[in-house]
Figure: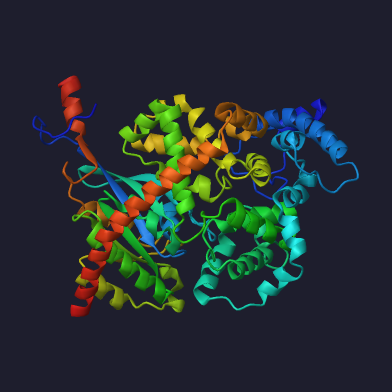
Length: 362
Length: 205
């Protein structure tokens, strides 16, 4: 924004609804946001110029170091939906299945599943002006995408949290069919075990995060363990929502840029960075309640808001982080989880058979 | 640091104990768990409360005669898929509110399943309350008050019909739990005496 406008804006000229339709909360810090935006707008202008040069008359960008660098620096909003479709392979899927999305909506859906979706629709982004109306707004589209997906992927069906992901995809793509195929790429290709009934992918990644923290920031790990806090209490929503409804919207979109191009490793990078670069604040929190609160605050503070430096920091903090290492960690953690589960179900099935016989007796 | 126990506690002071308890809310999706907590903690109500992912954590304090009860509240996600995550929230909890929606019979069935699970998996002394929420929608009632009350009596549960929307019985149910919780060190997450601190620091009462 131009310098002359700045004073004007700090007198709350900033719209109380952001460009994605989200109402700014009552405690929104207009001043720090304006300060960030005044710098970020310069970045956005430069990126917009670079991207139009990169794209030229082309529709697609292919792959390569340059594209990777460009994507890490943020896809301009005008190209974002389209680029997500391109770099994730969603467009290819869509073109390979013409008419498929429409056909899914005519299929009957299991009533329980339908009910799950129905109750979550009006509760998705209630603070977003586009999510208040079925006819005018995006609620109808959200329902269509979630219902179509439940018919498309019977194993996943519907999992709470997916409503936010589909909602955000609709905000960016402004197109149901594109949102559907991106949704499919995310849940099926990029995060195949996240939303299945056992949610083992999410549980595994929480465990992986813990083991990386333990190695990279042992003080934090000890501190958190000392207060009897387990990492699932802290990070479940981070992974399930892919940071939507956790980090500020602009930061989430920058993460998703990388997610669609580079894959799910970015989620781990972000989680590790959030923890490691807030070591001091976490260690200063001296009670169970304060630590839980601290983890909420660090996702909303100025460092998290300043998406550009946040993303730069993510790659600096996590450095070279090989796929092989992540795969190995996941394998180990998943095996641990499965072993614990087997042990538990041994006990549980005994307990539930007791209950069943008690019920029968009664 | 707060002192535990109270051997040298002078009697008759105006201040009493502070006890901290872990409380978990369980129940089917969209029955109003988050709304009950929001009403209790912030006195607010949103017609469309965002669906909870994983769980939300809040705290609130209630005052009884001579005891301050501090609740650490875990408000969990309702969808069946999150069921496997629930034990980490009710593990070690001293109290639970199992919520159903009086306009939806299925949610009452689900509440009973939660009660059963708590009875066999949670701490043996856990105080369980059953809340029939959305009592303001009495014209759409599907679960009779008597039916739920009988069930609660049979299972030694506290029971109230509540409305997060009108605030009916919301504070009351938390207060009833606070009253029923045993205020001793072995039961609470932690308990400490304010008076001991006064006694030690100033010797003046």
